[in-house]
Length: 274
Ligand SMILES: [Zn+2]
Image (cartoon, rainbow, N blue to C red; front, side):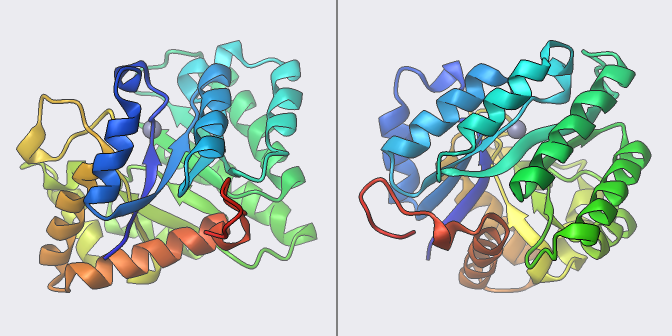
């Protein structure tokens, strides 16, 4: 069984002391593929570095809505330059977060749209963060999908709704728009019945799984630092919920990640294909 962690932050300072061991533990528990996701300029650069020096690790680059206020025009060109690395498989995480509003809403909107435009120019999929912003995020992504359909006959999914926290109806709307739904360890929390409903009902072809490490450890590790190795617990939990074998969940979610991020096209640092 091989698992793909579609969203983790190995560049987070919480991993600075033992990242090689964290990666080893992930591989030892079948998590062979990881996407390290940027949230500001520095973490995006670090994501690319980590991907370039570790097999099975890929990078997404982008500026999180919390940091939208720091995003400059120069940063957009820097992201474009960073994306020249074949290890960069997506733009993200980008989106809207009106729960904490660490950047003003209009500034978040501008940063989100500018980075979606960049993704269209580069023909890259996107990793989307949406919190307390269901409707505006859907509106912006519907426009993005529309803009893509004009000039870019997208073959695969357009992006992924990271750590999805909406209901089944919203998940279906996103699936129709061309987005995959990524379920995090939060699905194991006692109060997460809405997320369990989503995990039970969405078609396997739309499902991704993620840790969002170092955040959101699954229930058995709450209060601890999360790491990609813990993805196994979430995969088993979802398998149980759906009444399907964990191997099937692993295989389908890995294949969805492959399709979304076009991982087969990426030549590994070792010269091997993923
Ligand atoms: Zn994240």
